[in-house]
Amino acid sequence: MRISRIAVENYANFENVDFATDDSLVIVGENKAGKSNLLRALRLVLDPMLPDRDRQLGLEHFWDGLGDAKLGATVKVVVEFTDFEDNNNLLTVLGGSLVDTEPPVVARLTYLYRPKAALEGTAPQTLADYEFLVFGGTNEDNIFTATRRRELPMDYLFALRDAESDLLNWRRSPLRPIIEELTSSLDEKTREELQQLVSDAQSTLAQRPEVSAAADKVYDRLVEMVGAEHAVSLTLGATPTNVDVLLRSLRLLIDGGARGIGDASLGTANLLFLTLKGLELERAVEAGERSHSFLAIEEPEAHLHPHVQRLVYRHYLGEKDDAQENITTILTTHSPHIASVAPLRSIILLREDAEGGATSITSAAEVDLLPDDEDDLQRYIDVTRGELFFARGIIFVEGDAERFLIPEFAASLGIDLDALGVTVCSVASANFLPYVKLVGPDALGIPFVILTDLDPQDDGGAPLAFFRVRDILALWMDQEDIDQYEKFDDIWKDGELNGIFVNDKTLEVELFQAGMGPAMEPILQKHAKTWGAQRKVMMKGWIDNPTTLDEDKLLGWVGEVSKGRFAQALAGSATAAVCPGYIKNALTFVKNGFSPIEP
Image (cartoon, rainbow, N blue to C red; front, side):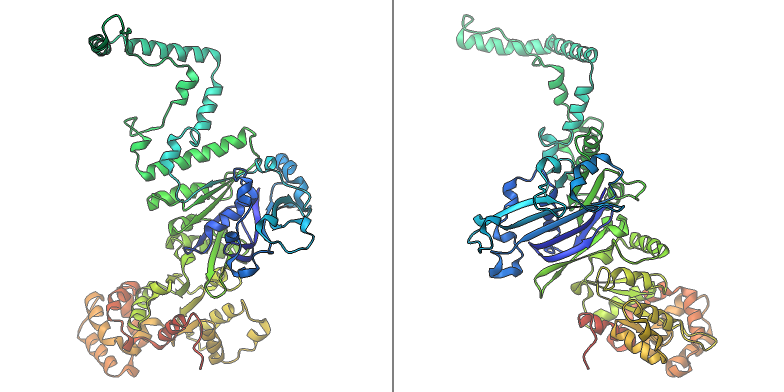
């Protein structure tokens, strides 16, 4: 089973959001965007441990944009489920909540917090006039009871959880069900053997001379104080105990048994806690105590080394074939390391609208991608550690050369990309289309610009950039309008209006023509395969008269160095005075809020 859709209305940061989801949910977004509030909204529907008094909301839980209209508004949370028709237990639990009976069947649970029905339309005066209900399907009388919630509960691990304290507290410890299962599995013979081992050990301990001497020392002092007549006989020994109590006293030890959890690092404690929690949830389903589990973890990266983050959450968020069938994982995270191992379609992006005062939510679950595009993106995101999901805007470039140079040119123009939350992402090719499909306006909705080479054809045909720009514009323009492009200048103009900036040939030629020739010469002299008198004279001539530049020869020399290494060495010479026009235009577009400058 999986959650297939979530909708939230008038709750916390959310005015009205409605989005599809995939097998796992990885919720990303900036601070204050509402990641924790989204989990709390899910708890209103799913968490059997949430007291009913916490389902009675306060005015502070209503969407702030309601203003004075909060009293009278209705809070609504909808969660839909699918892919459970082969599970008889889940069909029993959710059978009365179906809203689509055609395979794959869909069940819906709804939480409402609204003015009491008894008011019959009269405006509520206080929250005492409100009631909540959780119902299945479309019938409000079909109450989804706490008993049924316990069949598919949501286990919620807070961001500020104290893993060490929970591990040491018997009532809260995820080790508890493992010990209880161990205890119940022992037959009578095994219990008697263990009890005898304990009794023998206690007796041996008490009979040690050192232990007897310590007991005598206490007894002698007691006699000195009150006399032999009032003193009681004393021995030292372990308190008699039965096997159940003994097993309950078992604790996890680390470092070969040398230390307890109290001496563990915070990262180790969190890692052990998550391991035990996973085992606890698996056991609960296998034992028939529940039919499905939703494990929600806030900021799971807490105290974990980046490599361990990726390993642990690759386990939780593995491929569909490896995923735990009866456990749905829900994460909120600031960590690109976790986003990097998340299945692409699990990403749910929260973005705060400063002007509207509400948070928007976009999901990658239903992005229109070809299988090859999806595989390409999954590999790319793994390499870049998922940073693009945390960006307020993206500058897509073809390769490392632009990735090294663009931030330097931006700084020289007084544009702080970090302050703007803008990431420069190399796609290591000129194939921008799948990335635009992922982040474009019909998908995750992350603003972007593209910097690309013209790549003219030797046969004089349309440059490759023409097809590149046309295919991207076709994602949101009518095909009739796309087919009408006859002049290259027209498509370049429309491309720039949509954030796509094309140079006149290639990056290195643009840099030279913009005035970076003098900075290029010492780099080529140092790193090219050869740099004799002929090359020196040729380079000097090009610098003196850029119109004489042999573009192919220059690109050949740069290739001897490698484009990335060449750009890295050249980045220190990037200034506003030598910034190529198409780069300056793109950065101005970024500075203007990813919008063209009005003429």
